[in-house]
Image 1 (cartoon, helix red, strand yellow):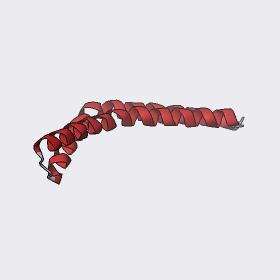
Image 2: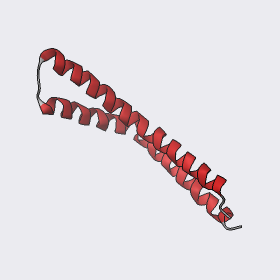
Image 3: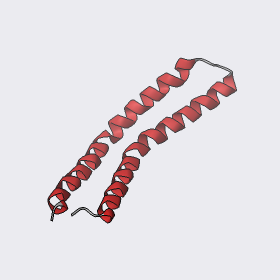
Image 4: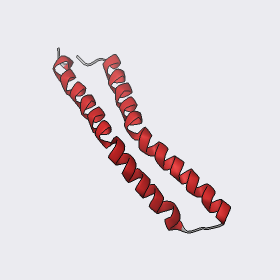
Length: 90
């Protein structure tokens, strides 16, 4: 039977995997956005595409770099969840 401790443990693992998978992309988006914001403030350039295009390019590069690791992490988590299913109804 699935008790409260199992549910809490599964939720904790799900949140941890979410943080691990999203952290590289969010960190890079934050760093690029901060850099572009400082650049725009220093040069008084207020063009919206100046902040959008570099972020998209940086996120595409980060996804190419970290994408395989993110997929492996998500598949490992899903596999561990599916392996728990038979133990839920004992």
